[in-house]
Length: 334
Image (cartoon, rainbow, N blue to C red; front, side):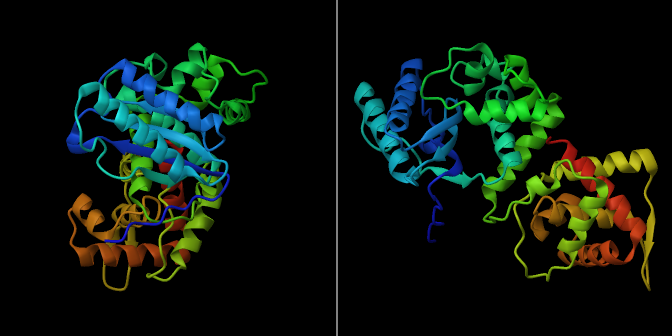
C-alpha cells in the first residue's frame, strides 16, 4: 500500500509520534532521553523545528512542533537516526530501533492544538507514571508549571493561548493549569479519544474552531449543513470521540428521557437515531464501527443515519434536542 504523503508547508503545525520496534523500550535510561532532547534542540537551533510541547515515554514519544521551513521530515530523520546510532553504540547492538517512519498529523486549528497539548500532558498520567503532568520529568508540562524551561522549548504560543483562554494578563503556573489541565478522568479520556480518532483519520477539514463554544443553535445549523451533503461526501476530521457522544446521549436520557419520532411506517427511539447520526458526524465513525458499538447490523445503521439527516432538516424539535446533545459531547473537551 502506498504511504500517505506528508503535508508539510512552511509554518505548518504537526503532532509527531514514533515508537520502538516490537513494543521494546525506545528509551531505557534518563541519559537516552537527554540525548534525544539534545538532538531535537540541535534542529531547533538550526531553524528546522519549533518544539511547543513534548512527552517522552518508555516506548514512544509525542511532540507538538511547528515546521518553520517545511523541513519536518529531514529534521526528524536526523533526530531519529542520530538517536538510534547513539542507542545502539552504547549497547553494542545493531539493527533497527524504530518500527517505521514517524507518524505526523497536521494540527490546523487553535482548539485542536490546545487538545494536543492536553493529550501530550496526559500521557504520563494515563500510564500511571505520575499523578499530575507537571511531575513527569521528561514532559513540557513540568517546564511550564515548575519553571526551568529549556531554551529550545518554544513558549510563545502556549503562553498566549493560556492568557487568551483565562482572560489573565500575566502567565503563571496556575494559568497553564487552567488552560491546559483536565477536569478528571472523563475529560482526560475525551481528549485522548479525540486525538487518537484524528490520528486514524485521513480527513483534513477541521471544523473544531467553528463548533467549540458555540450555542446549540449554531451547532444545529452546522448539523443541517452536514445533513445536506451527499452520502459519498468525505467526512471532516472528528470533533469528539465516540465515548463522548455515547455519554452525552446517556446523560440526556437520564435527565429528560427518550422520545419518539414517527415515520410513515414506524415509531423510532429518537435517541437511538441521534446516536447513530452523531457518531457519524461528530466522531467520524465508520458505519461498521457504529454497528459494532451499538450492536446493530449495517443496514440498520444506514436506515438510522438516513432518518437522522432527514429529521435534522424537517423536525425542529428533533434538531433542537440533538443539537443540545451534540453541544454536551463537545463541551467535555474544552
